[in-house]
Length: 125
Image (cartoon, rainbow, N blue to C red; front, side, top):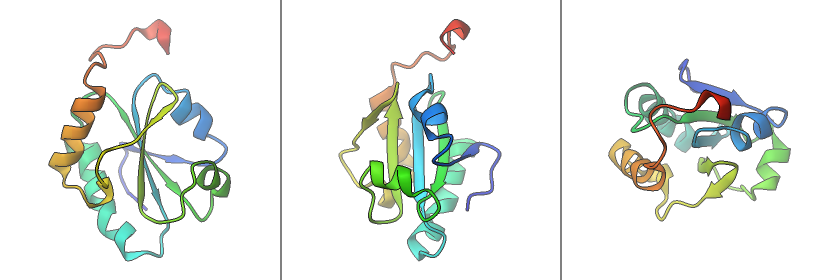
């Protein structure tokens, strides 16, 4: 759904490696291509990934229709849905980030994951 080299495509097959095993915080945009809300939110996620990342992190997208194992594992029944993970642990934002502005996304990430170093220890990867 998102066309950006800064947004990775996630699947049931790579979710554990790319998200749960990531050394960086990960924002996951779970969508289905047939909803208007997903289509409306996609450019915001793209802009966030391309121009507004407040710190080193990964932004990924996963199609909820095609990846039912991941969708079911996290109890997702409505779309769009934004999930955050850090060191394999899911974090729950205090607000519905599917209705957030880019500024609110940045603020949440800075407050929640601001302790992430700007330079990673390569041995940790």
